[in-house]
Picture 1: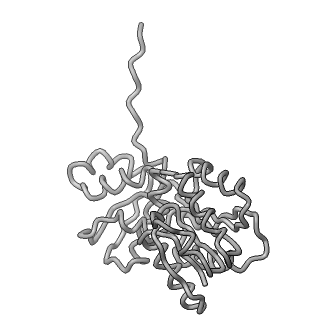
Picture 2 (picture 1 turned 180 degrees about the horizontal axis):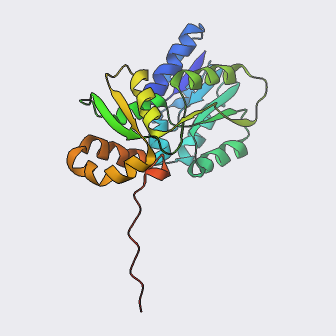
Picture 3 (picture 1 turned 90 degrees about the vertical axis):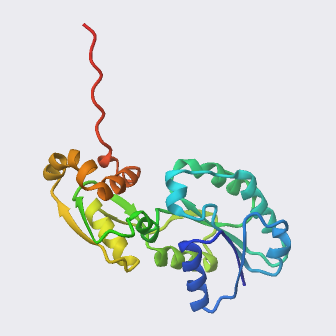
Amino acid sequence: MVLLIAEEGPLRAAIESELRDAEIPTHVAPADHDDLWLEAKGHEAIVYLPSASLLDGHLAPAPNPERMREVLGAAGAPGVEVVVPVFPVGEAWDAEVTVMKRHGRPYAALRAHPLLEEIAGLVPGDAQALLLPRIGRAAYCRAATVAAAVREAIRTEQQGRVSEVEAESSDVAALVQRAAEATHAPVRVRALWPWLFRLARPLFRWFRRREAQLLEALALLVPELAEPRPALPTRR
């Protein structure tokens, strides 16, 4: 049996589906449960998602070392053999990783890039066609890939490691198209060459506001999308 400590989101749903297909009984509890030790009793493994969304955990990290200690304390319950945390990528989460490593409980931790299914949430719901540039590279994971990695980590004998989940990468136009396809959104992306995008970008605010807002959100994932700031005048 597995105790899944997580809030609702695409990753939790994917892990539940993966473990159900593998016929691994799973019980879900929120991270703020008042007695995680009692919840963990009799479970072989604890899977812990410190951020309900890997995308939010990457863009606005909010690590909570004390909560990590509570999860590790629950891992001391009878029957628990391993803790499998799934951390968002980024140095901000090293605080929780350090707590995990020093605590002494057996672990098989994972780090994962934002989910394609989460990125799809940035795409305007009423958009049918978007003009986006073939620029930059953004790394992402698919929910099913992360869920499969969690299932393997539960059974692995190679404990005491922090492994990165296999990721894919795409330019902005391909990323949004794949995100829309992953969630069956009826959005068609027309790709612009970088030079054409740079010429047309000043007009987006007026004539392509959906794209302008989407690009602003994606700029945190793709630094090449950040608009250059005007140079400060030099003193003479």
